[in-house]
Length: 575
Image (cartoon, rainbow, N blue to C red; front, side):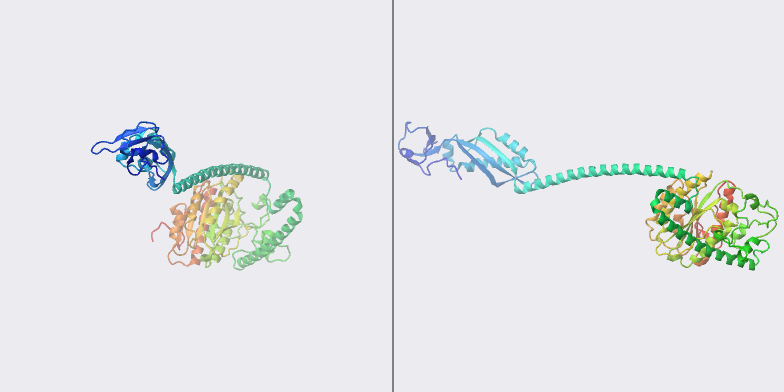
């Protein structure tokens, strides 16, 4: 498309102007003059005068022209240099100097007009980002909103430009907008999820508070009730009477299991007492009741209590303290000898003194490693528990000041003896080797048990001393990077225990240092010690420390003192 302003391609005679086809109503006749300027004659009708009738001339179109075009060939690059605008131009122009049009031989006016306009638009487009097409359009139209006289003799009297991103840039902007919308939706969704989470947390807090309140009411209601299995069955039947048959079946199985366990325990106790009598440790004349229960068939067995029940068990307090004349006397035992592994002396004629209630109670937790690494000493650890029972049963004053619990750990943690006052009636748990070795489960179990059981003891006695944990480490922990956090949580609790850590086996010094609550509470086996022998030494250490703890509690204080037997050394001591 082109607009020709010179209507004849070569000069023609003035008389032939009227022969030109499609002659516009407004033209200018330009006469070339040799050696001088062009002469211009304008007319609007053919009735005007003609001078120089037959002179050679050019006919120049003076009428107004309006055109629209899209700028495609000239790139309108935006500010970032990577994207382009596309523009549509609506332009109006006319000739104001026909002589200049002829002298410059302007055959196509659009080339001149569009060339000028695209240069101006291109300069302005470079100032704006691809997303600012409307601002660029406004700036360009403000600049071109005037009459513009071009040196080629053409006047631009009207120009409006419409600018927008090209197809590639439009896709880019669309993608940006989509990303922005997705981000905004994501932010709203995030806020909604946060609000829901906070709401769920609030509701859970309310439910937890309700559970705690109900549990507190139940504990208060059951505070004066003995929580044995029979009472628990009764409570269950009150709440769920439709499960009576199932509850009675469970009760029957429990009774059968208890009877079997009692028979096995009584048999073992009977064998042990026979051995003691044969060796002269216990005289038959001093223990007629015990002898009759073990050796004589004339009286029934002792039942659940077992044959090692003290002769004064189950009697009134005055009778147990020796107030009833004629009863064989039961002498006080020698706990120190028991701690060293020596025989316990029985007999004598002095009645045992009444046990004075201690000034405070000490919860004690014995944590034993039953992983594969402890397979060589598991029998000795079982013997250690039986030795502790013998020690405390023979020292009722110390036993009254201590509540003992036993926890085993391997891949998990099991409470094999719940916190209890140890006596001859206490069943010694068996120990079984299990795969795995992780500290975190047992530390988390301690974090659950210690505060709960300390609170329960505080409801029963006026004074509860800080708990003590004896932690035996044999195997290498598989969760070495995880358990320190659980240990830190336990130590951060207001009821944090004193942790006595004992390591037996190879390379246990470092883990003992990390487990013990204070450096002086860590002990390890000497280098090259036999694993089973080290377990025996741990038993001696445990018994001696329990004696110190119990006696200090009786005196109204708490003295945690470790006297390492031969074969163990403090971890702080240099090799």
